[in-house]
Image 1 (tube, rainbow, N blue to C red):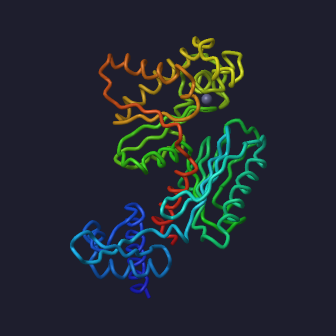
Image 2: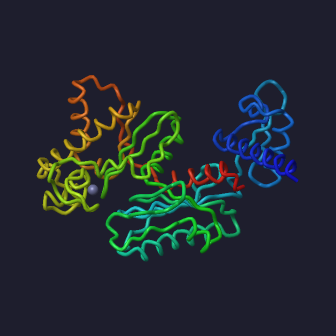
Image 3: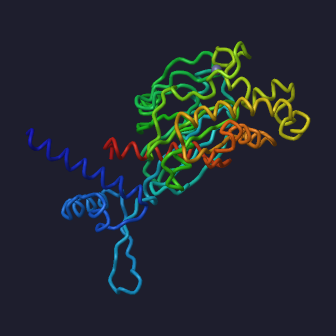
Amino acid sequence: MKKYNTKSNVKAKNLSDILWYIVSKGKTSRREIEKDTGFSWGAVSESVSELISRGYVVEEEKESAGVGRTAFALKPNGEEIAAIGVDMNRTEIERMVVGFDGGVKISEKVPFKAKTAEEVLSLIDEACEWGINYCKDKYRVLCVGIAVQGLVDSATGDWKSFTGIKDWKEINIPDRISKNFGVSSYVEHDPKSMLASAAASKRRKNCLLVRADEGIGMAVMQDGKILDDSGRFELGHTVAVYRGRKCVCGRKGCLEAYSSVKAMSEIAEAGEEELFSNPEKYSEVINSSATLAGIAISNQMTAFAPEKVIFTGKAFGIKGYTERISEVINEISDGQCEVGITVERDLSAAYGSALSAIGKVIKNNEI
Ligand SMILES: [Zn+2]
């Protein structure tokens, strides 16, 4: 019995390793899998046949140029399997259905109108229901990925705090979703989901992502791996000003209380719309908020030595904000900063959370 178990465990591990290889490559062949993974030809053939028969992988016949022989392209089956991605963002909720091959099937944004914990949880249920309904008769829903703000343990799925929602109590999201919908789910801090989304298209290895909108968040990728934070990289709640403004987290002087869109609008005593349309009028506020952000980001760059820093979120759409941050970073390094800084406005945490969830389902062998 023990022997049988061991054998089947090894087989399951091979299957998940090979499926992960196919999903991360997007398109491959048995020969390439054999060469890159080190599995024997027999193991590759057997696993691929099983993955095809179980609907995870499709084989597409393709003539290779000139040689006159037929190569077979193996691809993740995006026509039958999909994942739901949800970004629970205080600005706006984005929800989408992503095919197993990474193609977006449908996406939409809905207003975030929750004030209580119960209302937040209903919004999650609504998003799952929306995705599951869309997939009905079309796709098998493999998993749900949820990007959240606040403090979350992505290993367990415990969502510990959600800044701004006063009656929040720690809740295990995968338990709730499994009970309500019978689907596996994973929860991740939203900057990490955005970083997953940014890295998916550009094979980056070491980068830092800073999101600034209603709040401020950060995610770090080192050697191609997104570091698990569980609150350790809470850039928004590092201290920017001693005895400073009260922050939503309850402490005083946090960066978020100065450099988020919400904070700048409060300090400037102007509505957010007004801040965006009349940046010259509020340039003093924008300038000093961006200076604090620049100092804080520069410190993180010293700590993590990224090759690339990615800015995302609507604060970077305010005229002068990004420019001042870059200027401060450059000044601090006395003009020696060689790190590329880019603004990527369209990074989708919902997309990244769906991709991460697909990866976790495969790696945890839940296929
Ligand atoms: Zn704070």
